[in-house]
Image (cartoon, rainbow, N blue to C red; front, side):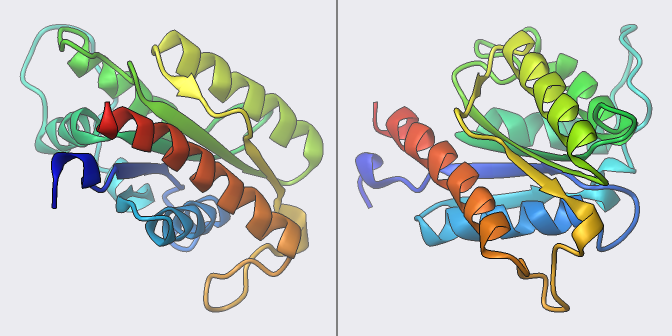
Length: 193
């Protein structure tokens, strides 16, 4: 495989501490769509994120999960963030993971610099989904990332996934596939330049 044919690495970050959460299922669906488009993927879900200590910006030793998160982001050609919409914004679990990326601040390309970042929000209602989507996109900008033009907002009150983890509604599958395609489009440009 030539350098130009390198498969982009798309890292999915998100979920909740509850196994089988709708946000983690949505993230897994999106990553499967990215794989179908040619990506290598890595999912850092709720179980992994729950191992991260609350980020402390004071100098000190970072934990193994913190270092693993920072290394995954350093290797990523693209990122997808999936969060539940809690009270109009992202969960503390996902925000702590993003805060932990402060460990990359001295890198040549810190945070999300130069990387496309897709967003998925699952919420019990459209208002929380919309405000959370806007909040996450603003954070991506602050972290020097490129939010994809489309962000997925899924209303979790309708039972989004079947027993196999597939979307019940075509409109939801379309949203997750669109996020994956846009992250892949930009990530492919990144790895071939």
